[in-house]
Length: 127
Image (cartoon, rainbow, N blue to C red):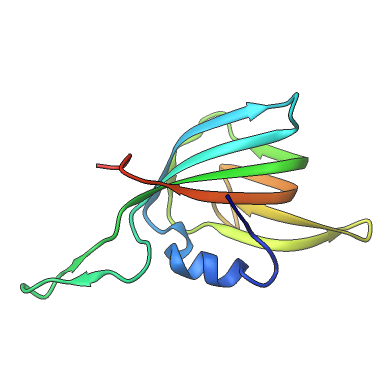
């Protein structure tokens, strides 16, 4: 798994097009391990391919994100799994750095503040 840091945060989000048009397919809360796993179907990763008819073909992948050292999390009861554009930022709380992930900047359906986020692409799992 790859660690998201200050240095690669923007390039990570750019590569996955800020999770535009993506779907969270599963959320696993593992409170004994103090972590939350997110499984996300990403429809815009890397550079889209220009087809002969002038349209773009998206690069689809499934992403697993593991949030560790949970400081705070919120989710809405009527949670819908669609993400238009997500939010990811390093924040300071009581002079400690945390990373904040949210499904939306203004009205997130899921938001997680934690010490560490790691990710990996799960090959051959998205149709």
